[in-house]
Amino acid sequence: MALRLQKELANFMRDPIPGMSLDHNSVEGNINVWVINVAGASNTLYEGETFKLQFKFPQRYPFDSPSVMFIGNKIPEHPHIYSNGHICLSILTDEWSPALSVQSVCLSIVSMLSSCRTKARPSDDERYVLTCRDPSDPKKTKWFFHDDDV
Amino acid sequence: MNEQTTQEFDFKDEMIDEKITAQQEAIENEIAREQKLISDLIKLDSLLDEYSLEDTIYRSKIIELSANFSLVRKTRGDGNCFFRAFGFRYFEAIMGKPDEVKRLKDLANKICTDLNQLGYNSFTVDDFKDVFVEELERLADKSDVKLLEEIFNNPGSSDYIVVFLRLIVSAYLQKNADFFLAFIETYQSMKEFCSHEVEPMYKESDHIHIIALTNALNVSVGIIYLDRTDQTEATPHNFPEDSNPNIFILYRPGHYDIIYKN
Image (tube, rainbow over all chains, first blue to last red; front, side):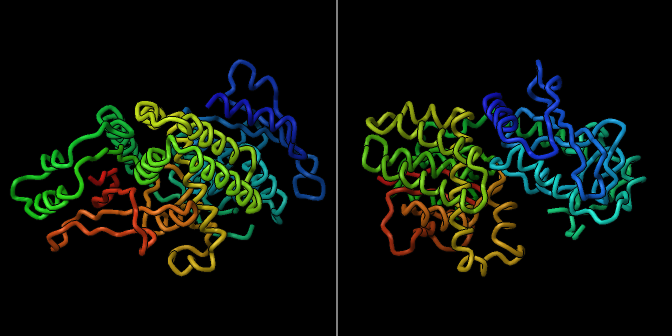
């Protein structure tokens, strides 16, 4: 796993996704947790806002998916992002493939934010935040997906 | 790509779920301790020990099979068994044959190009392909069963090979989606099918995976179906149908092992 993560790290720095930058302090000493600074893209509802996205890599990465969530005080207000930072995105669980990468996950999240038309929390936000199995690990949740155009 | 969700559980369910997860993990660890990814060669008739004396259907089929097949390698039941069994047996069939190794290597490179065209990240795909090719090339000039066993029992290399075989299937199915779409009723697109049923590790394989893999690699495989149906003999099924394979896989409901013809 370490080798793959090092490659991903090098790749992420060489070919950064617009609006995303790695918090270098986060990977120093422990490459298994990354924090990525996310700047809301211009001409989107999140223009001018900044967020922190955390990746935790399990031991069996890339065979198992990383655990990905927003952390800190500012969580994007979005119909698929819970106020505790958990993100409802199928490639993070059901549709994870070892051929995906940090970059593919980041691109999905950017596109999820950019395509948002109305800021809102998921309709079950309050209940989910109270009852989710592990606030620090969205992968412990059993997610039920349904297609949505948001 | 973007979805919304509803959570349907209360605290009580959660506790039960957690117990189930813990139990599943315990079972997985137990399996990992007891069953190597690919076992040593064992005699086919030792499979008789797995069935009680009253289980005449399985027992008589195994005895019948032993007229033509004598050895078996068991694979770990982790959902990857078809891919691992096929990978091991295929590498075994071509090791020491530089021409065939080269053919597979060229094919692997071509499949990477296909995957890139399908929008796959080249650096992750190449990572799996590189391990696949490196391990294959270690066997190009010599028939070394010990080394082969080592490669397939080391999760580091073995799982990378499994992932690449899964990607080969995914690329083939997506490229030939028009033909195969008719077989995947519950999914709306081939991409969606591959994301759920082909690429994730530990997902079990079905006919469609076997057809795609044998077609993509132009390799013939015989699957011997050993089940509780009434026929007296285990049913062989060749992929492609009119071929004459020398690679055989033993299928028992839910699981694939390697079987060797005399």
